[in-house]
Amino acid sequence: MNQTRRMGTAIVLLGCTATAVLACTAPTPSDGDTPPPSTSPPAPGQGASPSTNDPPAGQDTADPASGSVQNQGTSRPPGGPAPGPGGQERLAALAAQVEDFLRRRFPGEFAGVVLDVPGHAVIVYRRPSAKLDAALRDRFPGQPIRPRDAAHSAHELDAVARRVTQDVHYWKARGVTITTIAVTPDGSAVEIGTSDVARAARELPKRYGDAPLRFITSTPTLITPPTAPG
Image 1: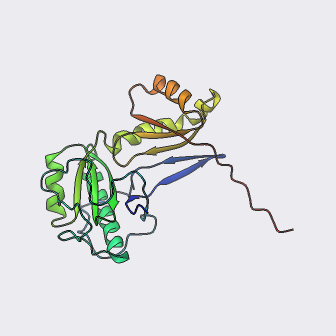
Image 2: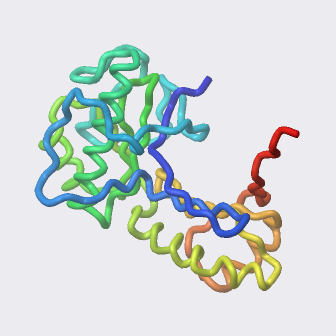
Image 3: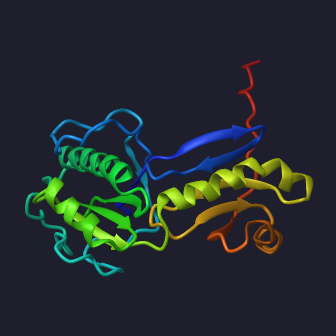
């Protein structure tokens, strides 16, 4: 079972079509710096959801930035949460605080956060920035944070996702049914779910140019009320 986790998803329903716009856990920004990580669990709605695309414990697929805590095994990293449910809650709380801090301080570089539960670490995707990495080390000293490079920021991908979301009915009228829209937390693309991948991949770039879009097969889900016992 893959225990690596990414942060939560915001979902809106459009008729019988579910459109998910993932903003990589977009907690509401607050004034001033976020306090250092505490041992309190994350607030409701900031819990982690399962991820199937992140690397397993003991393996890195991208070069971490200089100065990050290196942890390629499953033992407890220096300064990191202890294994177990309590440690996972503290890891989620740390991830939420890191994201809030970076969204406010580095909106042009921050892409997303992912929980590496087996490795007891928070993976931070960002556009390469020595200044961001230094700010992370200063704000969260000794914490199990692993920076990784991203092609795009969350701010950039959120804008693309909003534009596609606004065009859902436009595309439906042209025979392209869009069922899901999600911003990937690794900053690679906006993922579009559709029942006709070939057609969507051919038509959408004509409207959105070189926007980083990724297409997956996803069919509409009809929501029906439960049948009353007869």
